[in-house]
Image (cartoon, rainbow, N blue to C red):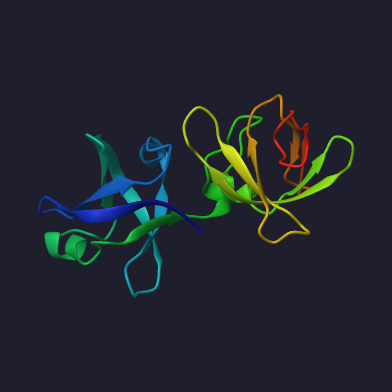
Length: 172
């Protein structure tokens, strides 16, 4: 399951909850029919969404069967989750970070560089952190730009890259 927000507090007396979205697609709440609510230290439960609306940087949700401030208060701090099938579809050439983690990285000439261990988001473009298969302490930082990343195949677990001069310490 994937985290898309957190209930920060009740809103009003009729059971609405104020949600801090953790998704890059907060408008998704307006179209959702249901959401999985995971309260701290309790089992998750799927709730139907009766109503959703924006309020500044938050989303107000009215969940079916949550009809009082007290019931909403019991959900404070709960994570809001969706299944993989409920994730927003991304346009071609865009990927969720969790899909990139673990990809085997090879150069266009077949040289294995390692495995994607992390994705940094410093600003202009993402940077893939690739762990060397032979040297545990060696990491390669690859900019996620078209000049470097030639192919990503999530299904086969592989990323093909063209190294630019200077990207590896041992190359000129």
